[in-house]
Image (cartoon, rainbow, N blue to C red; front, side):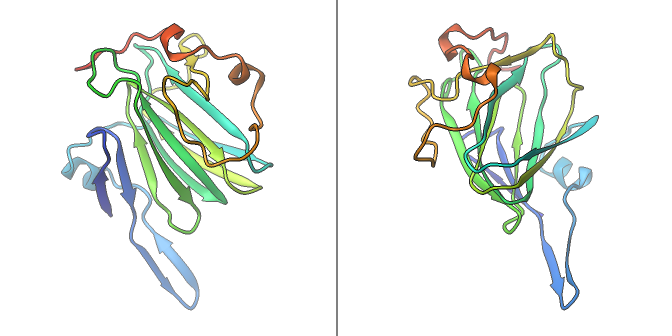
Length: 186
């Protein structure tokens, strides 16, 4: 398993080793001990899976407030997505900046999105399945969002048309107006 830091030290790309032969392939998608060797000590408590039928479906930017904040380990097991993490930690030198990467069923890469970062993805193909582990259970009372196309953040989404959005994502606030209790060092 290869672990690579991104422009944000806390946001990590994980590339599992894939072993293939005439039967197909095998990969280890999660190893607590390997991540611990890289200073990542998370206790995942819930696995989530989503299906998006149409190319151009955008989910996010989502996060949960403290004390129910979540770290996420995201992978795409069918199709392809552009996965994004946005630093929303007040006082951070990278506040409001984003990082994006393509995750798909061929490259098998995963993105670790820690607490203090908003998360979103857009589907690059039809019929997409995304699976992710979280280290805190879902809490509707703590769930928040930021508008996917906030010009202050300036995410360069790899799409040509308006994405397919949920009703709540269409009306999410801008980062400057979003409720947020993250500060650097948490």
